[in-house]
Amino acid sequence: MSDNKNDAPNDSVDSVDSVYDVVVIGAGAAGMNAALVLARACRRVAVVDSGEPRNAPAAHMQGFLSRDGMPPSALLAVGRAEVAAYGVEVIEGRVEDIAPGYFVHLAGGPVLRARRVVVATGLRDELPEIPGVRERWGRDLLHCPYCHGYEVRNQPIGVLGTHPGAVEHALLLRQWSADVVFFPHTLDLSGDERQRLAAREIRIAEGVIKQLVVADDRLSGVELSQGQVVPRSAVFVFPRMVPHDALLTGLGCERDENGWVITDRTGRTSEFGVWAVGNVADSRAQVVTAAGMGSAAAIAINHDLVQEEVERAAEDRRTADAS
Image 1 (tube, one colour):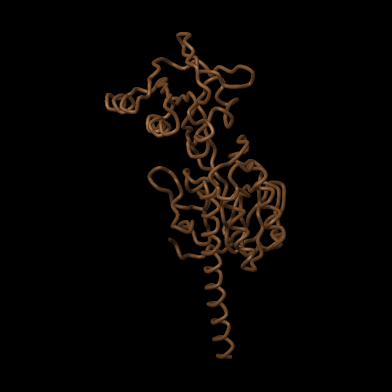
Image 2 (tube, rainbow, N blue to C red; image 1 turned 60 degrees about the vertical axis):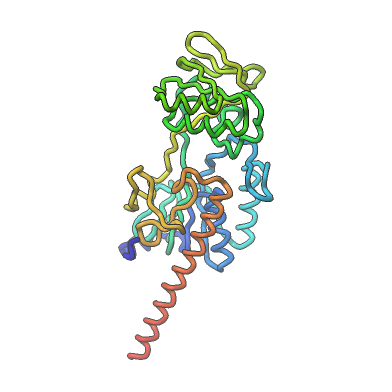
């Protein structure tokens, strides 16, 4: 990772409203846990959030010890109260740009100066353009088996073949139900894929999907273009996941061959002073994972700041001794 400090021109300082040790962008589990740990290290921290969490459509979150079944909104509310008790400033707004320095520009609002920056802006799920998909998203049109599989266990499950990873998705979901139907849609299945699905006793419903069928505000089936309706009570889809990484790429953070920003185990990017945590850096991170990523980043950042402060104090001492 780069060691070059990113200093801003002096005239930028005149427009700064507040100066912080760390500015965290994004108030999900990753960003808020980073803020919590940093505040407990007696750092001055601000969190900027636009109020658009990825898991907003979900009624509950699962797999988080002591928080299993808790609504995502409730977790965020508790998190805000916890960080506020340590003096963290939570600012409602959208970050337009991070200038070298680091000067965090909010849309129509203040400019915040930070010694370090944590980007926890998440990702967006691009859903297939099939009628009913967007309306049922997060309800009975689902993505993560580990998040929602238990709640629909032993039910008739469908898997939409709208992504190259859909076959693996179906093979995994067979763990939760003996009645899984795979809908290839426009996906061209190989002979090997068909054999693997058959080996797991997953039925293939040939044909292009026309729409999801809903009755009494509940999913009841998947309709194919030829008119056949395959009854299903839950359907899984593998969305295309696109990270909200414009702030990171704007700073010049390096990306891997798949286009995701490269980080080390603590979330440190290739740019000095910039960390990326949560889904913006790892599409597979669940809420509990993202919280852990935030904690790891916070500890690394505090050590980084301490090292900088020690070096500065030592330099000041040498200057004083010399004079």
